Length: 412
Ligand code: SF4
Figure 1: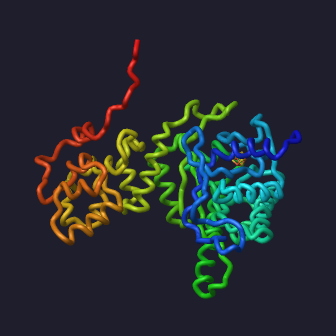
Figure 2: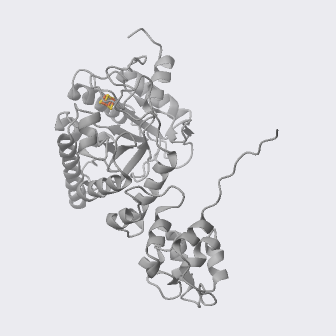
């Protein structure tokens, strides 16, 4: 590894980190240095995010400790056999960078991951040292997300939870078959064991803090994971099932979906083209349906065609078109869980409808004022002055809902 200055390392290691989608900082405890003590804050202004060319929102200081790795996962640009330029930060460099970016108000915190160098435990120890130094030496109160390495000594992961807000362990691929094929050195069993242990630590800490407020916090923003989509043959149905199992078994705060990006000198086992970004978007919508709209994973799977969510309409609309018998829904009488199933009605709109209908019977215009597009809702609702004349065919509704793609006109 040639000698590089910090700026050159930052260019390499921030670029190498952009493939990790799990960077949101929501859900942690509020800490602030507004009273003049400490540095940083997990809330308020001064947060600078940037967008990668592929459209993902990334934190400015989202870096790898190193992009060297002893593993050879096919889908990863940092794998052992890749000929990318390598770099490695020292613990001290990451600490200094974090503090200086924070003081300049560039970032809301640190997202730190790493390729595996030496051993999993050695790498994890380096990551923990960064978080520990920030918290204990510099009284850093900003957000810290550490990527953890499943094979590392559990004692290190326990320490990581004392300093980081969120810990994450990537499941990498939706199915064990995919993992065995594309990351043969990783083990689905070990990944799940590490997630289970992390969940136990988080649960124990919750109990301890319920009894003793002074008990130290452990990963207060919980654990998350990331799944690469489109690198193997897994369908959306597989992805939805896998995510539901992860939420159910390990109490994850988030599952992030990352559309596979083709990499230079890619292995022959990988697809040549990336999946449409819309696929990633539809999976996030499906995830939302399960977490906030009361859909079972099997119902979302029911909205797929041959296992794949349609790209031209959102999963909730796809489900509604396959269940025309459940519609139209009377917005003045239906229970909350049924209102949440109406395409085009979000949680906030449903809450507004529930409040408003206590005062009077709602008309279509009233609904129009509470939503962004009444056109999308018409076929699915009954209001005081509105009932769809006949149950239109799903195909007809679908045609009216899908807007034709705009194309640049040819001038010559
Ligand atoms: S272990 Fe992580 S960094 Fe190393 S090759 Fe696999 S995915 Fe890439």
